Amino acid sequence: MTCCFFLVENTPGGVLEARFEDGGLAPLTLRATRPAE
Image 1 (cartoon, rainbow, N blue to C red):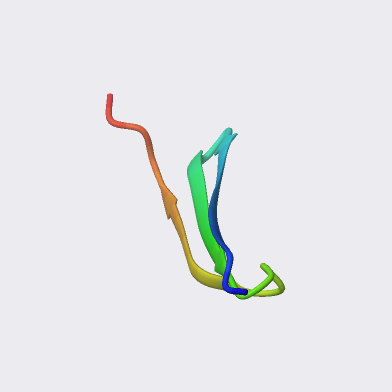
Image 2 (cartoon, one colour):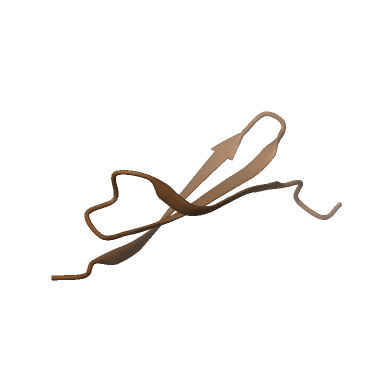
């Protein structure tokens, strides 16, 4: 079964987003974005 979920974490440097699929062993996409000011 394919599973997909997002991990969004607020960090001092900005927002870290990771999307995992197929059990979440490795992130399909990983990006760090800074919040707009």
